[in-house]
Length: 409
Image (cartoon, rainbow, N blue to C red; front, top):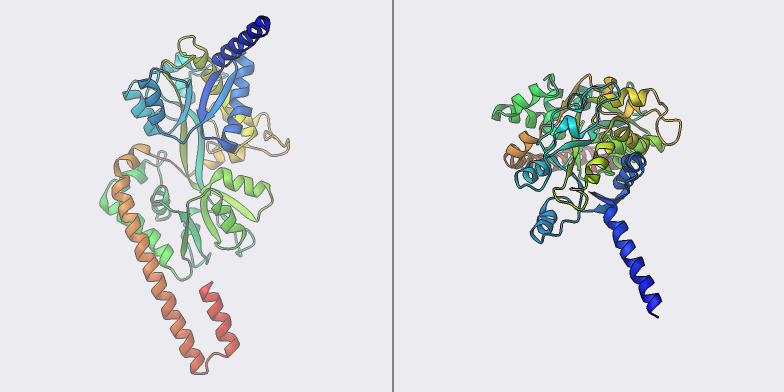
């Protein structure tokens, strides 16, 4: 009996030791985390010999703050948004990087600080993935294919409803781009105008005109799967979307074409938790270094259409096409950073939205409410006109019913 108990104790001790050795990465769960596990984390494990494990969370810093307060920090690496990197850095939750020392150079020796596409929002952040707010259209719906953001707003040439993201984020940027503002250096010109009240009104009027147009009209999406669904079932003729969702829909054979003109590039970051289980022994940083290397970051494109941060990843993927896991799909055309996709683009400005979101969202909600009311009034007026035409004998009963059905739909 004593031998059995001794054996069990050894097993438990070994199990606890093994788990302590693993670097814990905190992320969002689902297919996204699976991509990270199969791509960058697996690559890093093979390069370092250090094992990793993933834990799901719902975002924010509250849970980590609780861990720190209880002096029982369980996490090593976190996948976070820009504002979290700033707040966590100020609070001393995260490690401040010596960027070119902590992160690998590009294959040609270019320092990491020059290989990443833009500066980090804080000294505690390193780029994880890039994804884009793009737009798409239902194929075989028009005489010619829409190609520019101006076409998205052109209801005369391309009539039909559009779907827009439910919040103001990114909608104001594309509205100004469609109204003739060239983004400039990654959207510099766009945000310069949006910082003024006149600029915001200009963008909102552009959206209002699209949504209130009888030849256009808008519905709004909040779930990532909705744009592809709305396009496929004919609910709308065009929709903004996240690029990865449209890529998946196209890959599955949906009648959808993605357009990259006026794409808005958005970001996710990694942070290294200070005093996590594998902080002082250096294992967490070794894993993070390999996950964010050129090859480590590019490995995610095997599983999802989100680009790595590094410029060197462009040639890395190009030279290994077809790069997707199916062995036949080229991924360079699906990268936010691809030269063919960055002729007219905006880098989302998280600082602008952090400072102005409350004011803008209030204006946005007011505009949406007015659009809804005016649209409902317009439908009522058109129904009354149809009814009068039917009563006066201009329309037959069949014609009246057909037009009424089209209007209500």
